[in-house]
Length: 167
Image (cartoon, rainbow, N blue to C red; front, side, top):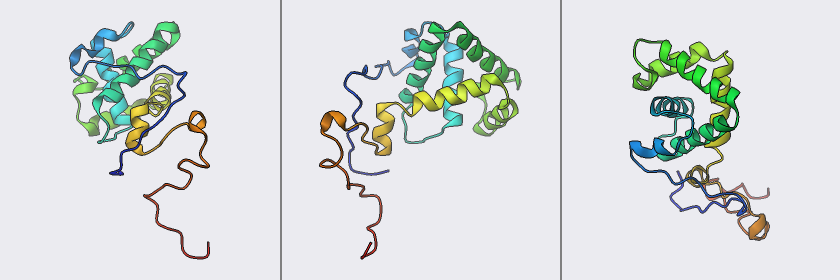
């Protein structure tokens, strides 16, 4: 990771990230999912996209976005419920209590299902659209409202080597 602090920018017309409590009470903001479903989905998001440097709250915000989607679309809510049933039914222990290797094997066993694809694609959509994730990865985000990239950060990738002379 880059040691220089990066400030990422999203379109100011978009809502700010959801501010969640740090402890188990974070599930209190959910409208559709209960604590078991929510924590199972957090564990799945971690297993699908493991980033040791990302805090738990970004995975939880991803599940909050799943919950908002499920609240608007009952078929999507059913898909998330089916996913939890599949992963929890694969082993005698609930999915979220499995070791990482057993979680990976469980997910591999259901990867052809629509429920898996829903969780996998939704995780990509919401996890990597999080401002805190952008900052952690060094992506500065949109620059339109800041005047564009030409005069601001066009050539500031300090983690890349300098090009050879003559290029």
